[in-house]
Amino acid sequence: MRTLLKVQMDTAAASELIAGGSMAELMQSMMERLKPEAAYFAPQDGVRTAYIIFDLEDPSQIPVITEPLFAGVKAKVSFTPVMNGEDLNKGLSKIQGA
Image (cartoon, rainbow, N blue to C red):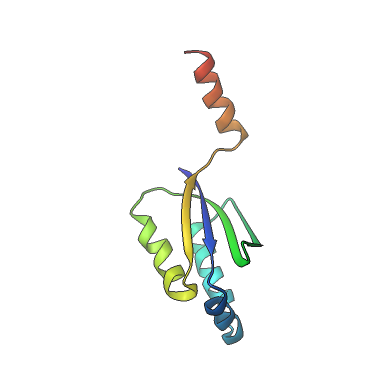
């Protein structure tokens, strides 16, 4: 299922990883694991935030994805099912045909 993973990083923990040179490794490892369709990074609510669109094949992936983020940057995470335009059109056509 196409999923939006939102990662909000604790400022002190993320700053420590950046200063120690390991933030890039954490992000690279996450990108290799998730193979995202898209990934964006921006400040939101005053903290470093990542928005990653990827295919969540099975809910059992959640601990594997989140534990490094909890341990590494004391992150707050959320998972939201999302659609692209094609998915939306497919869903709307099912409503109209019902």
